[in-house]
Length: 309
Image (cartoon, rainbow, N blue to C red):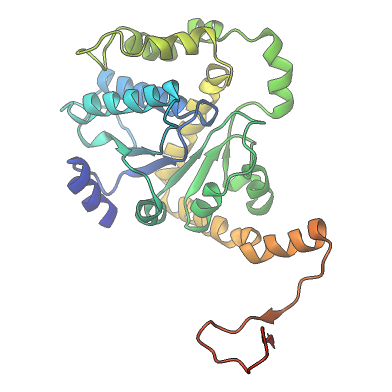
């Protein structure tokens, strides 16, 4: 409720508080594949438009993050998301079934509002490109379920929570390496009607009628220079999202998975991490000693007083 009120005040969008809060917040970069999320928004939008009386799980999709000052493609992705949001959020046929929010000026104080309210955490980078990542751990600790690839910390998270408690899709690192030499994204575009329609709408200015050629660079990258193999994973991503929607309609099972995520998050504490660093990297044995608080008086001539727990 608090986040919905905040978004209505900041973005002027009325949020359905019973909708799934589907969130992707991180630095805007092609390898993190916010663009795949944007294509999924368009697929959902087209499905609703083609069958307005159909049964859909309502979603509020939020994307937040910042682009490097000189990163043209990242800024184009932000612009595209905002253009999609403008069309979707003002379409009376869509109504409360789908809302799109770009979280401007994403920062720690906004994360404190967004992460605890999230239902679904998007961690969808191409396998083998994410060094680690900690945002996914924060979502896990706060009870959001994860949809993601076997990349970065998703791998460790799955080991802790069990593969049945996370939504994994897409190629593995080995499969990426095997497919890359012969990968042509346009083949996937031509084989998938929903994907083709979404990209054609972007190309033809459906979401940017005031500037029809605004996203020609995005379309060119997707069809001819898709180095992060977005189109190769897209069909599996959409099918995995359908599994997410199906489970969301079963509140008891969804809640069980949330609890299992929270219960399995202990490994990702900073205490455990620093202990491992001390033993495995620095070659020192951690000590259970406590530094006195800054305001605690110390004896003259003593630089540091250590007190055992």
